[in-house]
Image (cartoon, rainbow, N blue to C red):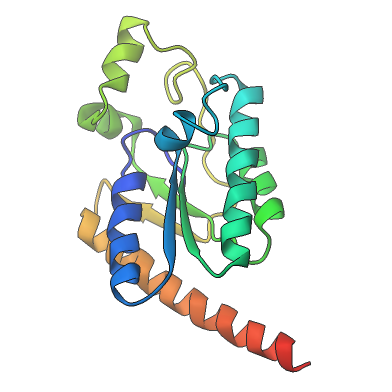
Amino acid sequence: MYGLSGSGKSTIANAVERHLYARGRFTAILDGDNLRSGLNKNLGFSDEDREENIRRTAEVAKIFAMQGVVTFVSLITPRNIFRRMAREIVGDRFVEIYVKAPLEICARRDPKGLYKKAEAGTVGNFTGRDSAFEEPDHADLVLDTEGSSVDECASTLANYLGNFMEVSKTEHVCRTIK
């Protein structure tokens, strides 16, 4: 799941994760803020550091996916090349979800106060302000949080993943039989 800061990535991921967990699915969330306080704490916000942040996170997500864990990754992921890299690392279980919200809406929400800090100049390379965010080349699902509530987006994502997991399960069974 990717989008601007404040677009609703983590909020939606948490809602869907709770829904799937309550239905007996093994789930995990890899959230950018949490990862940057541990595994990726030595990385900044240059393009090179963002790429490494995404690469490390994709490698962890791949390990979880191989174990059957439905893994939600919530990162800004500002460049299409980074998204393609993550897809290549994770493989056929990768689902690209764009959490879309205009910069103005995200700045108004500003749940972490980052837009105010960026405006004051205390946060550098802030995505959407002084670091570009590329619209997706290819997203498997787009969740527009400007026009839809968290519950609506979570329901859309849960339904999409339910269909995806059934197809993946069928493909796995077919591969196992062959």
